[in-house]
Amino acid sequence: MAKPIVTHYKVISARVRSPLKIALVTDLHERRAVDILTLIRAQQPDLIAVAGDTLERYYGDCYCSTVKKRFDPIRWLIVNIIYYINLAFMALRPQRSKPDTKNAYSFLCQAADIAPVFLSLGNHEKELRPEDRDFFRANQIHCLDNEDMEVAVKNNFMVIGGFSEEYDEAWLHRFAQKDAFRLLLCHDPSYYDLLVKETSIDLVLSGHNHGGQIRIFGKGVVGAGGRLFPKYDKGIFDSRLVVSAGCSNTAAIPRIHNPRELVIIHLTNK
Image (cartoon, rainbow, N blue to C red; front, side, top):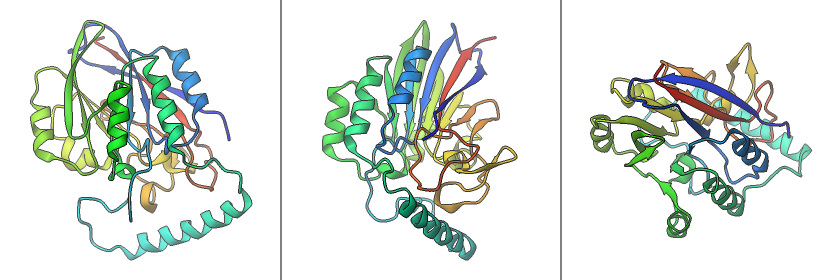
């Protein structure tokens, strides 16, 4: 597997009193990520945001959105084509990293020794187990499931919220009205246009699309659930939506021109 990269983004806000460094981790999917941890240690962030799909906790279709959509035959065809291509690659690469909860737990424990960890839930975590929540509490992993908490970091007062796949729109509205720097962990960036864009939330951190798996001319080809050329594949949009390409490769199809990445956000007031 190719080495991950570190991508840096700068976000300016008048609400920031002193410079703050945030590490964004997404889409671990219970894979080994020792190299990502090494990069985090080297960057020395002030806090670590883990924006969804850290664990594999779902039954049935994890891509069945809470937002109802009509049947799309083209998307259905694309998903099935990708599925069979992926099966072929799996036959050629039988030694791929497999999901294991121990990998995710180990990563989170070690990350918490570096900086405070705030975690939101993605589409692969719709059926979170009681033992997962017990683990979070025991290891000071702040799991934000349609909830928020006030945090003071380096003289900065901020409110960090986690917007889950099974979302609570009323909570999001209350969160958006709070008088502080508002940092939202929202795994699926498609909710940005749907529910977040018209709010005044200061910073939104997402993942989900894995950078498009294969990138051509700087654009991701296939997003989550087989969506072609997803609008928010990776990068920074509207100066406040940051989308990571993710920290693992769950598909047997290799990532082409699209390395795994650790994202570092530099918050500043100038």
